[in-house]
Image 1 (cartoon, one colour):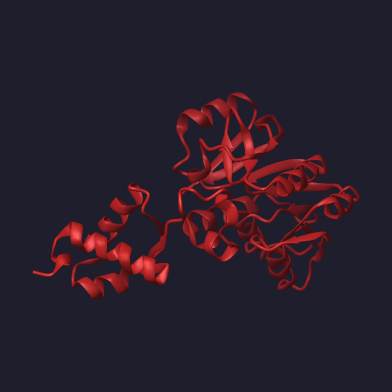
Image 2 (tube, rainbow, N blue to C red):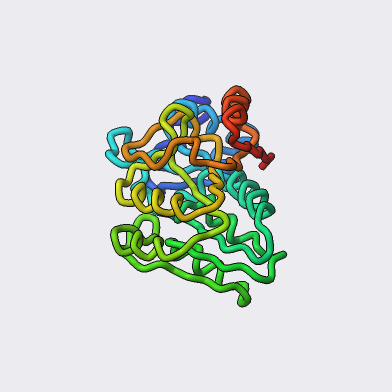
Length: 263
């Protein structure tokens, strides 16, 4: 009997393949082990519950070391794969909050990037961003005024941070800021592992008439190293349907609008 003829053996073999390749797909694992997609998805769910891998649409990624000092050290390509359906749905819903003629500010988060990918119905927008990827998406429309702010390039997020970026930000006001966050809780507010990013985000918030936080529900109940802002700085949160109902009620009592979407 092969070791992967048992559920435990199969799951061990999945982890071994992840150590070798960093990512796997459901179709690939189905072919290797000769079992159904339902069985493979169950295996991946169990391994994720044990914090041994990260599930993404159509497969899984290798879990990072629990000793990693900054979880945000994953590059932006990796982060785009995690909870991708949730992020896409959030981006569509958040873009619907924009009015034609608005000046919007977009930070470097992968969920904020999805907002920029959903601007097809608009004709006249000014887009200010610290994100190279958001800038590249925005220029594809060929009809918006797009400003990429200068500064120190942060390679993991392909974004601009630091004193020069913050100085440039202070030149502008915007109607709406779309802010992605790594960690969120009612008590600790918004936070991120990177100190420079937190400082840049704080300046962005100070220049916005309306602050819209966009993040999936996996970020809830967490606190990272660097504080960005307390929840009273937010006007709206757009998130997915996994957002805890009790926290939603608590936020709405604080006059923070919470809009949830189904992936």
